[in-house]
Image 1 (tube, rainbow, N blue to C red):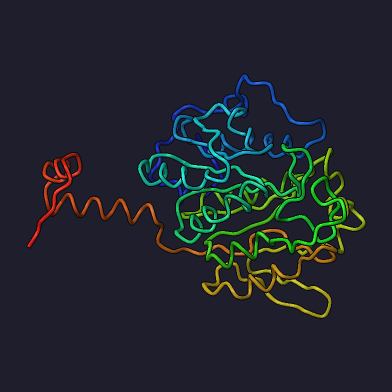
Image 2 (image 1 turned 120 degrees about the vertical axis):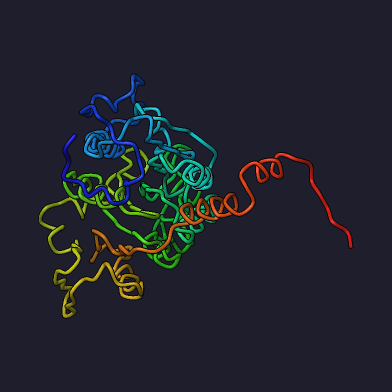
Amino acid sequence: MTTDVTLSGLRDMPMSEVETSRKDFTSDQEVRWCPGCGDYIILNAVQGFLPALGLKRENIVFVSGIGCSSRFPYYLDTFGMHSIHGRAPAIATGLATARPDLNVWVVTGDGDALSIGGNHLIHAMRRNVNLTILLFNNRIYGLTKGQYSPTSEPGKITKSTPAGSVDYPFNPISLALGAEASFVARTLDSDRAHLTEVLQAAVTHRGTSLIEIYQNCPIFNDGAFDVLKDKDQAEGRLVRLRHGEKVQVGDREWVHDAHNDNPSQAFEISRLDDATMAHVPIGIFRQVERPTYDDQVREQVAQARAQSGEGELAALLSGRDSWSVA
């Protein structure tokens, strides 16, 4: 099928000879999120976007952890796995390394990814595994009924912090840039066009792509991002990042360089955001090329086979432990 998506990051994957539509990527499972949840918008955007990749459905895999967002694999007619709390990046790393023919996604939330799953997330980004990670951030624990999360703002009153949270929250974009992620972006659940644009750039990137998606929880944290969705207020608050274009915030002005190998400027931009949401950058913060973990591991295996012979290597791997004692 024809597509306007740049497929450089998907070059090793089998392409479909049959044109597909959104319906082909929609499962027969009843979608079970609360009415008004931002997850619906993200799901619809992904289902509508996947046909543009031109990939076979059996070569696309969605791996999720635990939480409301992690029901995602049920609703897509691709391969998928609803896995373990916080461990989706580790499972996805194994898949991406063992199967270069798979287009591997991770779907996670601010609680799943940034609490128990924090180390798995930062090491996947540090290693630069070929993964597209969607991090739904609603600043609350939704599935477990409204406790504060690692991204909840200071003073947040919840069931687990009735006097207000005294925790200092993570900035997921700053965290990703600090881990040297090669692709880092932020978008909003309510901006379908921008969400799709960022998805296209992320999924075709060779390496780890992290997209933070501000997503509304209508039950336990309703209206958390209303100031960014109100047309009158959004204009003054949203800082739209596009590579090579001029950006101005107050008296500061610069040309955004998402391709800069040094993440310092991107990190500085990420720090514009705070609990007041006076200035919230959205778009692609960083998009650089560097060697990927899974490509290099497969290259090492191929070299080992070439040097020792595939039969000998297979026998060694499947044989008993051996020790040489001098």
